[in-house]
Image (tube, rainbow, N blue to C red; front, side, top):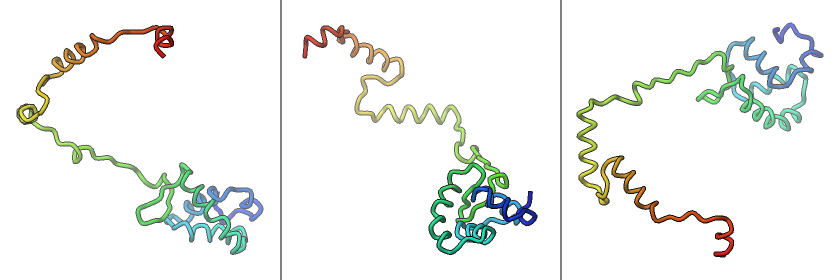
Length: 145
């Protein structure tokens, strides 16, 4: 339903975020928080004092609503008007297997701790460390305190 065709009494029953959603749908342009809330206040015939008292709450409602998105230029728009596109190709470039092997060899040559250089060696090393551990019952723990 369009705000311009609604009665003031019907608009008053809506939340500020619902009014903002209808306003943005109708006007098809993004707006900053202050201007958008001023338009809502005009529609509801709210005073400047109410505007000042409620704008922070309006901003919080906008940020927590799933219907809106804050654009980089500081304006609000409907999330339905925007799509998120993630391009993974630019973030990660696949390397040849040879390049990966060279990097592994270079990394392992300069390490300070050369006791293990592969996952298998690391697991054996960890098992050796755990061999000296003893499992205590709760009674033994209490007695040792």
